[in-house]
Image 1: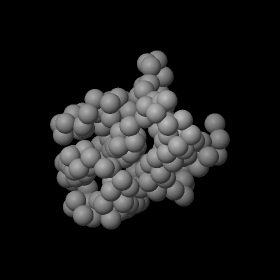
Image 2 (image 1 turned 45 degrees about the vertical axis):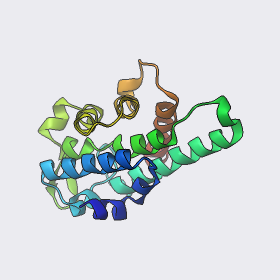
Image 3 (image 1 turned 90 degrees about the horizontal axis):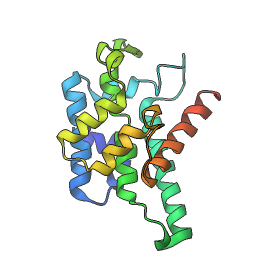
Image 4 (image 1 turned 30 degrees about the vertical axis):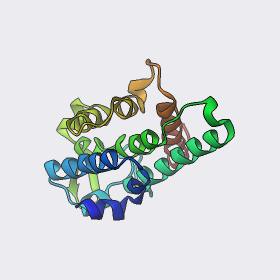
Amino acid sequence: MYDQLIETIPEFSEIQNETLRKNAIAVWETALKEKGWTLETLKRMPFTILIEGVPITFIEHVRVVCQMSADMCDRMTAMYGDRIKIDRDYVVAGALLADVGKVWENDEIEPGKFQKSAHGKLLRHPFTGVMLGHRFNIPDEVLHMIATHSREGDHVKRTAESIIFHHADFTDFHVVGGGY
């Protein structure tokens, strides 16, 4: 499934640290395998089940938010140079892993129709994502991004990488979802 995940989400290849890249892909492989999902199941999932009939897929959301986050990182680094510290590998890995917990948060009840799972009713995807990432030695800085990217992070100090991803993620959510 490793090669199929890179084909489906080519942004994995942007993670320069080989160990981090392999571990991030292993998180996705495990989430899918343990849930009993195939890549085809994942490709059918809408980016959110909070908005009825949303025309954007989960994979498209993950990919565009990763691209937006990497672009923001690159732009800031190009302008400010060494005056700020942003780890691009962490930005990309965190963007690709932040929503992996949605695999466990949702159930497909019929092809293309998803609802909140029993697991998802008790644990939102940031918690599950951190759990999955920890199993594969994902660095704490990336686990922080997963944990704080959504409303769970509203009362903690986010790192630069988490701030970048948080804003890219919510920009996509609000634009695609039609505003606040």
